[in-house]
Image (cartoon, helix red, strand yellow):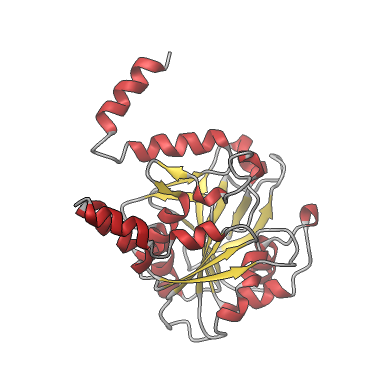
Length: 295
């Protein structure tokens, strides 16, 4: 693989059922739930585009056409905004389809697991290129986009994979893939192994993997040969860990910024509050509301 080839594609996994948000997700994907005034998926696309990505591959399932409609033009609302003289809103709506080149893939009949969306997009990834992979329910807040941080590290060290990492409380290691770093390595944050959802006693560190990756095609190919693992699911972690055990260079990069998951209602609300703190137009009044409401 030509590891100096520019990274221009991002695969976003958005094929889940969002069962923890029922009934809100009965007829819409979880990734379309709003964080203030933009759906979750919009923030992911922005992060990718601001990192130099040109092609966004959205892996969806049946019933997710609302996501495709969102990133398409909408003549009726555009015409209504134009006639009403709402030029700011018109420009905002018109810019959405132009953010990137959008490609939609259905996950279809693949094993359950976080590796399956990547396999669904395999035919769209050349065997000499690396690709960004993003989980559709993970958000980040950072001055430099997290995807850009990973891409820069990939260009510098030319590893097999770069994975975003963030420290979590000891009691939460059971929820994530946890990294075991090499004790002696010329490459910073080189990984010896990844333990998927270990017990607290088994966890080799508190550094957790979350849904941002830059992966060489070697990882995509290895994933297609990986057997189902814990919980009878297809884990991307297993494919990457196998490659690390074979001597391939895998980097788990502690990010500059903050990872926010929206995978359950409580963390979704926390993420909404965090994003509200970034908004100069609502922060002051929102904080007054919180202060008066929270006891």
